[in-house]
Length: 112
Ligand SMILES: [Zn+2]
Ligand SMILES: [Zn+2]
View (cartoon, rainbow, N blue to C red):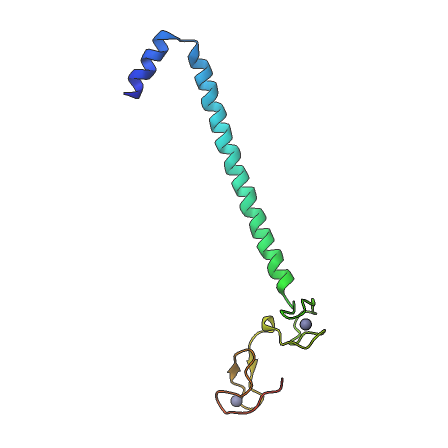
Protein backbone atom coordinates (compact mmCIF):
# COMPACT_ATOMS: atom_id res chain seq x y z
CA UNK A 1 0.00 0.00 0.00
CA UNK A 2 2.67 2.48 1.03
CA UNK A 3 4.90 1.32 -1.78
CA UNK A 4 2.09 1.92 -4.22
CA UNK A 5 1.51 5.44 -2.89
CA UNK A 6 5.23 6.07 -3.08
CA UNK A 7 5.45 4.86 -6.64
CA UNK A 8 2.55 7.07 -7.64
CA UNK A 9 4.09 10.03 -5.89
CA UNK A 10 7.35 9.37 -7.69
CA UNK A 11 5.64 9.26 -11.04
CA UNK A 12 3.70 12.42 -10.38
CA UNK A 13 6.54 14.45 -8.95
CA UNK A 14 10.04 12.93 -9.17
CA UNK A 15 11.64 16.12 -7.85
CA UNK A 16 9.90 15.55 -4.52
CA UNK A 17 12.07 12.50 -3.85
CA UNK A 18 15.40 14.11 -3.16
CA UNK A 19 13.61 16.29 -0.61
CA UNK A 20 12.04 13.22 0.93
CA UNK A 21 15.43 11.54 1.09
CA UNK A 22 16.85 14.67 2.66
CA UNK A 23 14.01 14.66 5.18
CA UNK A 24 14.75 11.03 6.03
CA UNK A 25 18.42 11.87 6.49
CA UNK A 26 17.51 14.76 8.79
CA UNK A 27 15.18 12.47 10.74
CA UNK A 28 18.00 9.95 11.07
CA UNK A 29 20.34 12.69 12.21
CA UNK A 30 17.78 13.84 14.76
CA UNK A 31 17.39 10.25 16.01
CA UNK A 32 21.17 9.90 16.27
CA UNK A 33 21.42 13.25 18.04
CA UNK A 34 18.68 12.22 20.46
CA UNK A 35 20.46 8.93 21.16
CA UNK A 36 23.68 10.84 21.86
CA UNK A 37 21.74 13.25 24.03
CA UNK A 38 20.17 10.37 25.97
CA UNK A 39 23.59 8.79 26.51
CA UNK A 40 24.97 12.11 27.72
CA UNK A 41 21.95 12.55 29.98
CA UNK A 42 22.35 9.07 31.45
CA UNK A 43 26.06 9.67 32.03
CA UNK A 44 25.20 12.98 33.69
CA UNK A 45 22.57 11.29 35.89
CA UNK A 46 25.09 8.63 36.93
CA UNK A 47 27.64 11.32 37.73
CA UNK A 48 25.01 13.22 39.71
CA UNK A 49 24.03 10.08 41.65
CA UNK A 50 27.68 9.33 42.43
CA UNK A 51 28.17 12.92 43.56
CA UNK A 52 25.02 12.81 45.70
CA UNK A 53 26.20 9.57 47.33
CA UNK A 54 29.57 11.17 47.94
CA UNK A 55 27.89 14.25 49.42
CA UNK A 56 25.60 12.12 51.61
CA UNK A 57 28.62 10.36 53.10
CA UNK A 58 29.04 11.62 56.64
CA UNK A 59 26.24 14.15 56.24
CA UNK A 60 24.17 14.65 59.37
CA UNK A 61 20.43 13.92 58.84
CA UNK A 62 19.63 16.30 61.69
CA UNK A 63 21.69 19.45 61.11
CA UNK A 64 23.17 18.75 57.67
CA UNK A 65 26.73 19.14 58.86
CA UNK A 66 29.27 17.48 56.59
CA UNK A 67 31.33 15.28 58.90
CA UNK A 68 34.68 13.66 58.40
CA UNK A 69 34.57 10.24 56.76
CA UNK A 70 34.06 7.32 59.11
CA UNK A 71 32.70 9.23 62.10
CA UNK A 72 29.76 7.55 63.84
CA UNK A 73 28.20 10.68 65.34
CA UNK A 74 27.65 14.13 63.95
CA UNK A 75 30.55 16.33 64.96
CA UNK A 76 28.17 19.28 65.17
CA UNK A 77 25.12 17.95 67.07
CA UNK A 78 25.94 14.37 68.09
CA UNK A 79 23.23 12.68 66.01
CA UNK A 80 24.14 9.05 65.21
CA UNK A 81 25.02 8.77 61.52
CA UNK A 82 23.40 5.87 59.67
CA UNK A 83 26.11 6.08 57.00
CA UNK A 84 28.61 5.00 59.63
CA UNK A 85 27.34 1.45 59.21
CA UNK A 86 25.80 -0.99 61.70
CA UNK A 87 26.69 -0.64 65.34
CA UNK A 88 27.67 -3.58 67.44
CA UNK A 89 26.77 -4.46 70.98
CA UNK A 90 29.37 -3.24 73.44
CA UNK A 91 28.86 -6.44 75.42
CA UNK A 92 28.36 -9.36 73.03
CA UNK A 93 29.25 -7.80 69.69
CA UNK A 94 25.90 -8.55 68.03
CA UNK A 95 24.97 -6.28 65.13
CA UNK A 96 22.53 -3.58 66.21
CA UNK A 97 20.06 -1.54 64.17
CA UNK A 98 20.76 2.22 64.24
CA UNK A 99 19.26 3.82 67.34
CA UNK A 100 19.14 0.57 69.33
CA UNK A 101 19.31 1.28 73.06
CA UNK A 102 19.40 -2.27 74.35
CA UNK A 103 21.02 -5.20 72.62
CA UNK A 104 18.50 -7.69 71.25
CA UNK A 105 20.94 -10.51 71.91
CA UNK A 106 22.07 -9.95 75.47
CA UNK A 107 20.06 -6.96 76.67
CA UNK A 108 23.10 -4.82 77.44
CA UNK A 109 22.41 -1.09 77.45
CA UNK A 110 24.12 0.70 74.60
CA UNK A 111 25.78 4.08 74.90
CA UNK A 112 24.11 6.95 73.08
ZN1 LIG B 1 24.34 17.16 63.18
ZN1 LIG C 1 24.73 -7.79 73.20
